[in-house]
Image (tube, rainbow, N blue to C red):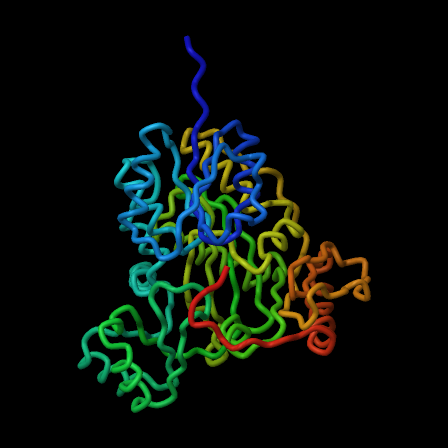
Length: 401
């Protein structure tokens, strides 16, 4: 009987990320093809793990990508198609449906890309969401503005993080903005601005089941950091605390409702200052950015990229098993820096686990067995980062790699 051939993965990303996913695919005996942007030709890809790399020009139409991959499929038997970044999910889902490769299709994909779709699905599961209205029918919008107190936020339905979000303080501010958007306004939703503290749950999902989850809390809401500048921090919340247990259960229900069969998820919630309730903000079928993966691994030993790869390789055959999980605590501190290569050697507490090396960025990963130690250090380090390193750039209208 002939030996089964190795699986061939087509990994798609227009940002420099996912190296550990590709390395793990190779370690699992798979062939890995990378489809990425021409501008990333010289990026730090794990070339020793790649069979071949294909580069696409910027702003290439989706139909042209489908045609290019269809030509590739004449000589390469493609078994899995994986989008390593949120912005490539539609491309990957379109390719899966066109080539009939198993995995998330376009309908399910929209629950993890379209903020309107995911909010409506969350409501079906009685998960609290901030009061919202689609930017579609102007009569509905007027009714919403009359009955839901401001301020509000106008959010792009398919952007990540705080990109493109506009805060609206009065009803008369909204209509000129919508007029300016023109035919693009239906790609937005209007939502009540909820002041509060923002949390995120990072999950590993196998066969519709959340097999691992780690609950963390941002120091400042990401919208504040992204639009106003400042030092970014996030850290593990105390395990078995009320917030940890509550968010784990809500996340489990939500991920199941959105339809993620296998992979990873990064879900964000806000705890409202006004009533103390958690409200769902968004869920993405990807590894969280800003070194969240490294923080999760420092606290638990679980590398989200690696487990995602192992789950994709298993493909529902029942062989995937989560490795042992550590229950420690970790945090990230990261800021844009004035210096090209900031010197963080003065931060020498024993909890410093990893020094982040990134051009014009200063960053550290902290780790401790004490749940109070990491947030205390982040508070102290944040003040020092602001004085020693912090640089601020204007908010971006579009994401950058």
